Image (cartoon, rainbow, N blue to C red; front, top):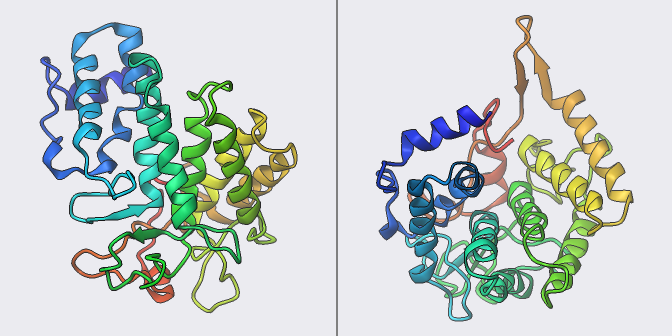
Length: 301
């Protein structure tokens, strides 16, 4: 595993620490999680190019565009928008970096990202969080009153709960924001658990399992299983979430995993990609999410 990891980074990082495939000016928060394992690699090898690559990725957050309240835009091409996906893409990397190299000075800024999601993107009826929020209300998909996108997408919620359990690895228990994030994790986990299907899985559009065309989706279900298991193991969530996680995992194995005669393991029913806005335009409708292409063994699952 170590050789694989080092080989990946050595193929993408030059000896001077530069990353040819990385474009700072895109301000794409999806670029940051590729750096998550670099902390481990630098710790093990002490090779300076890995530290330089970490610094390069971290520098993006210093100038990354933000909403008026301080939330990171998802990408420069999506102005004034926060997406749930972005919490996973930016926050665990930011938290690990500020703990290891900055004495934890930016934990409040990291917590602020979650605070803004909770303030602006929560649905009071279900307790679930919408996929995206547009501060400017200019996008056609945005509700003109709230700025929220129209639906709940399981994978985006999965990114969010994974972001919470992973950030809590680095945020000390005695930090004033620690308990706040644990509270958010409990609130959203309770809302997600209510939507679990009898199979143990979750639907692509989280709260509409009874609608035609909706399907039990692999990546969101896997992410919930991970976050609930880790949350329970670490004591952030009540012990009952171990059973919810096990039911989800068993449901994955029983319903969504195939083994070929040659012994290849295939995860099925994974949504390949989904987003909001862009070109061609993605409207965030129910029909949009259920018609997105599915892909076997999609990396997110």
